Image (cartoon, rainbow, N blue to C red; front, top):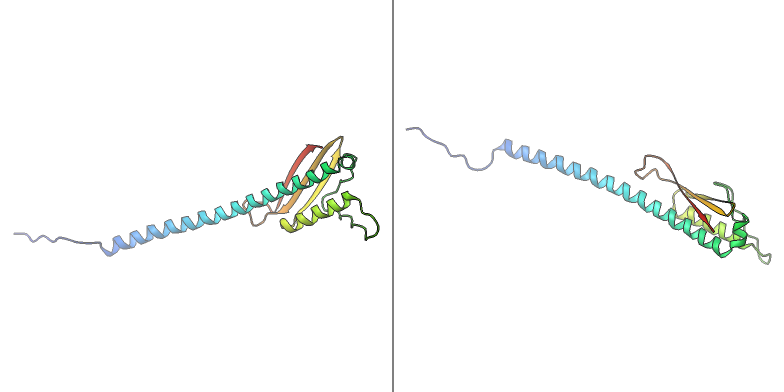
Length: 148
């Protein structure tokens, strides 16, 4: 009469295969988490750029006559006018542009912006360094045109 062996439990090879499959799954999960963090970082920076664009649009609408005449125009990377030292009065547009540029520099890495008004249409550009993000480019730009 033949002797039958009943194997109970897992063999060493089965355990090693299970650990290998689990390790591959965990590596994939870590890669997904890294991609998610990069996408989240890029999205946060784009959101901040939009907030800052609408910030300067609101400032320009308060001082609409000067804004429509091009008083807020500012080239990308150009130096921001330094407000006058009291008691000399400083035009509101100079204060607004300086505050906006300072906020861009503080809120976005390498953040800068430009404003251009032509025939009543204002185009605002915000540029920043997104090298830590997922867009594949170091420099990102967001442009909005609006009528004041």
